[in-house]
Length: 183
Image (cartoon, rainbow, N blue to C red; front, side, top):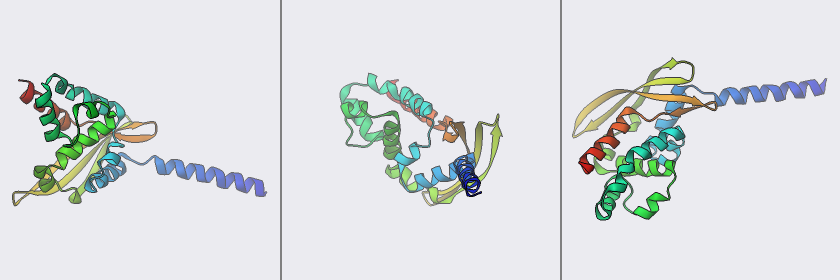
């Protein structure tokens, strides 16, 4: 009898722990935006699909064609100022993207305008069971003007975890930087 009870409790705990880790795309989005609010970019990047991080780095590979002196100026503008050409090449895709987030979101323009304190998850639309499109409202101020935006972030279920996919906006930023610099 005691053995059956122990098996029941063990089975129950495994089931509950499995349910806890299989959160929804919306719940994952809340956790992700909470980390952005805390400026914990390394942990936030941990929510990204590794393939998306690799794709972003490939989009930014145009930097290698920039002359050395301009490349260092580029890194100081869009990444952390203490990174060098040789140090950035040794970064993993996740560290590379986290450095980009720190450089851009930590810049004066973005740090004064983007306020992750007022992020509201409005809902989600599931697609084929492994994609969740999460609708997010963000309210912030820019130059004393209140701004409200509604965006959609896509999460893909990979290995039982919902992972952030690279947004079209981030891809466009990378392409716009490339177009402006490589002209």
